[in-house]
Image (cartoon, rainbow, N blue to C red; front, side, top):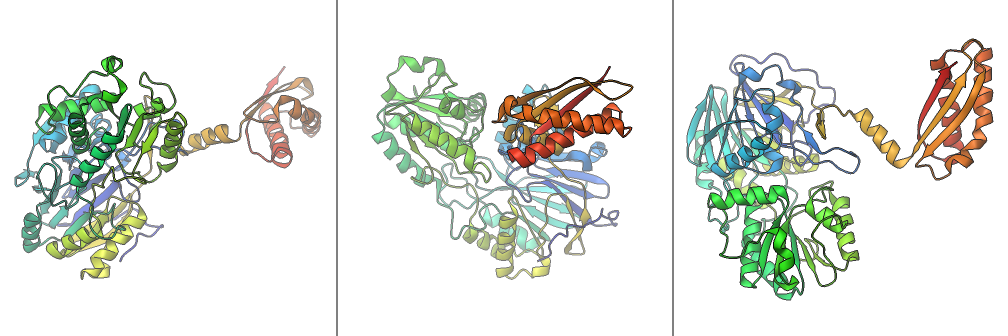
Length: 561
């Protein structure tokens, strides 16, 4: 298997007749999925999603793909193709469309409905092109065929991209549930037909490549939820992704069977389920739904709350409930169900919420103690079937951390794909397809783009480091007035401390050292205010490191009089 080299250079210009594939997100992480295809100067984008921040990224709301590779080529984009409606595949579309609003957005009925509602909030009127499985559409040099795949959201599609350079089959996120709730299975007959035609590059979902066997069917969740509902005494709170239509359907059905009413909690949950119901993807039993404002009118043993926050997002409904910062409350006798899997990196945040809910007296049911969720991704056994059915010439694992990509590549090799034809790429690594062979051609800059409030890309890694220091090590500011001609200290040093356990009284012992260092600097001719600030920073930094065993942020302010 070919591995990207850390010292890859910028790729050479694309040769005549070759297809270039540039992943800008989703390879090396779970989320932020986006891939750019280039042929003869024209571009096609498949998916444009977000990544949710981890604990070491304080204050960040969302993480976007890095658009710098295409920001000067927006007029060359033929279309944005959405494989399905999850946030990690559609969430960054509004930010891309800020650069050019009339890019056609191609997707299934539900995917387009979800993105249209999101774009309305961003005051963007999109150009939508609805497609369905079995259809073919041409966008410039890109001839696209859409294939039904089963996932944890209805209407998911795989995409076959035909160009004169060859055919690429991109699975999107998928699994092979043989008894799905909506009876819409992954179309392996289409996969086989495309394989007979000749798939030059197979881009396959890697998220569950390390998991042996087959992913559990969605239908197995229903009886488990039914059992939890039967035993629950008080309120039931179910947390899931706001776009997980199948899971919400199962909760509605269980609630109806046990004489309970359901209130949707969270703006995105209400928006998405309203859309799914209007389009016929969600069947709501008569009389089951109730407005969240009326939940206090019902006894607790007749109430179910379906909310967001299954990944520990700090502003989501469940996090606020656990922190007693929401109109909905839980306590002894109540049951909370986490009906989703843990996205890598979110474990600490989720367990913190679980502990908070248990502390409030609630019973918490999650994937570790009950089968209340099944994955939406193909496990190793299903991936092996796909490789044997498609028989691709080249394989490029996508959608997953490095360990997932490597495991997926190893599965391809087991089915007979030559190791040199398995391309393990990461975000920004450029892959060229020509004459039936895929090879790594270089790499383009591809970093994280942070959304922080209304700021997009304004927060840098250096600023995040400052935030971590402030949160973990504290803050010391020193104010000094010096004589502009002699450099002698006129007033101060005055210290202000935040987040340092020792406090200002303890740090007062360093004042003589600061004064002495400033006097020596002035005697040596270093009377410039900037140089004086560096002197103060060094003295305080050495003291904090040696005496306090910490590295706080140090802000010296030297004023000349």
